[in-house]
Amino acid sequence: MKHFFPADDFKSCDGVSVPLLVIQVTEMKDGVFISFCYNHMVADGVSMWSFFDTWSKICSSGSGFNHKPLVLKGWFLEGIDYPIHIPVSETERSPPSRELSSVTITKEWIFHFSKKNILDLKAKANSEVASSGDLEVSSLQAVSAHMWRSIIRHSGVSRERETHCKIVVDLRQRVNPPLEKDCFGNMVYLTSAITTAEELLDRGLGEAALQIRKLVSSQTNETCKRFAEDWVRNVKNLKSGIGSKVGDTIVVASSPRFEVYNKDFGWGKPIAIRAGPSNSISGKLSLFQGINEGSIDIQATLWDDVIVKLLADVEFLEHVTIA
Ligand SMILES: *[C@@H]1O[C@H](CO)[C@@H](O)[C@H](O)[C@H]1NC(C)=O
Image (cartoon, rainbow, N blue to C red):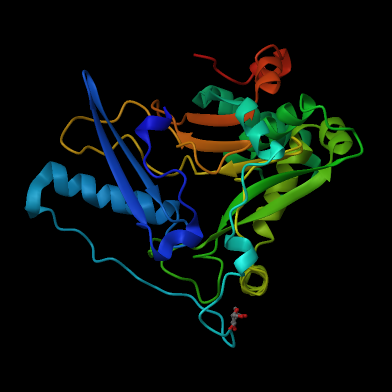
């Protein structure tokens, strides 16, 4: 799979000298694999899928396609000194350490959630917290909570240890005044729902989903501003990828809201989607639209033994479709 993806070893901070976008099209005997690698400092999923949409329409309908002009809306904080410098220590490469080489014992697995699996999970989560007077948890929050609890149950972390569920926040519509929904750029950040393994497992699906729900709704203009301020003050380079070396964190990346299966470059509609190998250590989940309407596919990077235990876990499998 790795060979289908170009440039997966580029770092964002190398963007001054290496391409910001690399596309590879691999022709096979019975199909075509189109992949892309982009610099996440410049664009995010919303921007890349919108680019892909336009590009595929140009390919399939020729120059007659009338596309919307690109909305480039910068968003900058006042009172910050530009340019923002990346500390030298953050750009230095160290030879792969023992810690990093443990990355190789992770495996990938695709978990399918049918429309029925998702509705069941959502109903279960909402029935568990129905009396709390809060708003409903969404399908996505219920599915994320199910993955979070199931992975931590088998992660081997001690019960008193903190566990994080990191989710992506799109700040376009959260800043005030809001930005255009599909303006081009990188306008996302990661934020964490945090609890102990004990609480996560003892309290049930509903509470975990509700915690994610509350985290999402607490992201306001102020939180976005604080995130951006902290980021420029404390520039950090992603050293090994998103996920966890100790198995206590999951990262919910990508989104099933991105439309995949309507992208036709003139070679027919897509049959599957996969995330590339970059940026992942244990606990990274890439969520995609499934091929059947209303379904979700989760590409999980996890330690080998966690996958083995998940595939034998009746409580987990009750709401997952293993192809
Ligand atoms: C939102 O945050 C920005 C940046 O700090 C600030 O300039 C603006 O006044 C805030 N908007 C509201 C409505 O508070």
